Length: 390
Ligand SMILES: NC(=O)c1ccc[n+]([C@@H]2O[C@H](COP(=O)([O-])OP(=O)(O)OC[C@H]3O[C@@H](n4cnc5c(N)ncnc54)[C@H](O)[C@@H]3O)[C@@H](O)[C@H]2O)c1
Image (cartoon, rainbow, N blue to C red):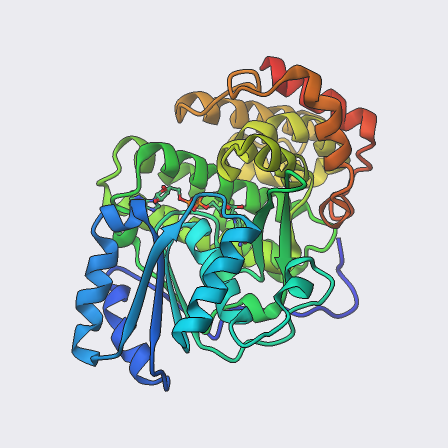
């Protein structure tokens, strides 16, 4: 955990948070010279009426618009590439992404790649995306991935059955507009998985090797307000107060994730997404207690703080008991939010666990950010336990 030296802290050009913040979108577009706008989303968000809402809001601007709602959950590099090619042909010069992490990841990466000729070098990770010349505005409809404020975008590599992240400050949007009203229609299952995903971002970035005083401030606040809102947001989706709370959790955790990175939970979740197409939030939520049971041993002091933030008790005098309280809380979350509790339940083949562990042990970017040396054997052990369930 770095407490000396220097570090960058990056955010989008503007982060606008609040009920009805969506209504400011036309002004943002007016201030940016654009001849053709690309509106990127998916069928679920379109079905909830949110794409139409944006179209109607932008109609008075009379800017030609390409509406593309073919984004699939857990998007692949192939989908990203075809989206970039399509918008290049259309001559779009401003991108608006509305949706969960899937639509936002495609939207922001498309905006960053739209003026690039050699896509393959960027998609393979050989070339880092250094700049973006086309404006990009993101509006999250889940709470969430925090993708509206992160420098990452995650895609599935179909050939290698892997998920891989692209990382660059060019993936930060010009404006992130977080309007909790956009999350009111988010289905309970997605609210649960993406909500616990946000908590995973907070706790993993909190203990991250690259965490700083500033990132920990964001992570701490996210963890403190998470328990007050998650259950109501899932079981009473129309409750605006809970939706506002979870929008805030997601955004704060996203800022912390963007600047400190995440760790082993994500490293072990990636292969589950790549091979079995298990949703990112579901995989993270399920793996979190199993991973923390092991890695949390290296962060006793932080676990005491986390237990306090989650109002699980004061463990100052018995610091080694804090980890168990935190892990039990993580298990309870799975039950209370009706999330899967074992890999078996998700259709994972037990025989594939060693291969998954091999893939996870190669996610060096995230494992090196975890303050615990997770060997291949330990990773197999975690997958085995998660396979059977607690
Ligand atoms: N870039 C990052 O920093 C980052 C961080 C975490 C996860 N991710 C990525 O984000 C993706 C997951 O995103 P997600 O969990 O937000 O889910 P998602 O974007 O895949 O959406 C899940 C489903 O919920 C529906 N939906 C979303 N909002 C809705 C709404 N308001 N009303 C009705 N339906 C709605 C969508 O149509 C979709 O069917 C994964 O690909 C993951 O790898 C990215």
